[in-house]
Length: 328
Image (cartoon, rainbow, N blue to C red; front, side, top):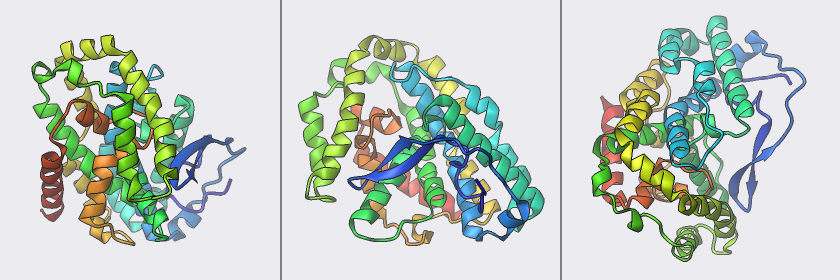
């Protein structure tokens, strides 16, 4: 394979994203026999593709804690911290190399190409996109679904993911600060299949009146719901061990200010209105509220639903905070 841009972390992955009834799904593929990264070619790639490559990797600061929480709740037995070790301190690396990446130098393209390759390998070695794809990617997939159904072009994947990561980072900051296990009533955290199926169908009816998108989403989501019900013991342990779990999750997450610092340093978009084409606040809100209904992987978005958070209020707070940090 000849890589022509530092745009996504999929070049070394043995998985491929595709649309099924308008819904993004990841299917098995094969490794390339070899990956050629010619630095001069990467330097000549459109700048927006290089920016997108950085953005695709910033997902780690939401996907890593998502993966860890899913593991502690019993919904992902394949969790390992090897991808974190493999990738290294991404935020520190990006800030140290931001000038060379922004300038499109050979050195900057070499660093980014290595990180992108390691991101793909991290997913392949985990046999899932989980290490580099969490709540932020599902929000991006929802925005793609909205675009696909209205025949609009898709925004640059990594740049859209980066902005969704800002939303995810702010969501994590509030969840890790405000979640109180003592306030949780476990019996009220396990909605029935009937309730959630109706919720999925209602959520996607306005996007796809044929019902195909909703059916595809429910086929995946019900697997997660069944797992959630089956692991009540892990849920009880999660509540009991929350102080230790929170401390660990905080190590993987980053505040949105840190992500904005990186994006600003490489002169990347900081707002959804800066995407091409732009996304409206209403579209991003729809993605925030409904992303978790799309697939079987548990993310912070699911916990907001299961723990009965006031997500409308949370959305307003998260959006306002994200806009504020982008304007500073």
